[in-house]
Length: 88
Image 1 (cartoon, one colour):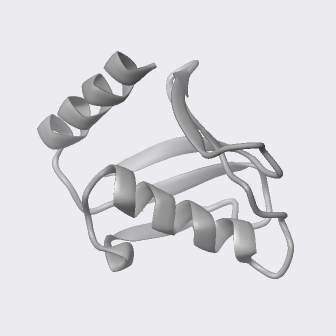
Image 2 (cartoon, one colour; image 1 turned 120 degrees about the vertical axis):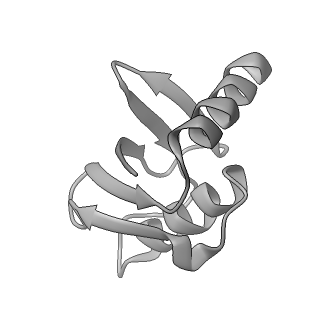
């Protein structure tokens, strides 16, 4: 499934929230040499309990707004998002 992601780099801590139908993901790294993209795929894999290879940036590799593909079904995604919103 594909999801829209807005990335905020150079944040003080990693965080993921829901904003305007997209995920807002705060990352620690700088957007240089693909480091932020690598951190994004690793973080999303960790949050959604999938392998790193199951997370792919489909669109927007050099943009703050991205489309990311996750190998998981919508029911599992909805359950994980509910858990994230409970923690917030």
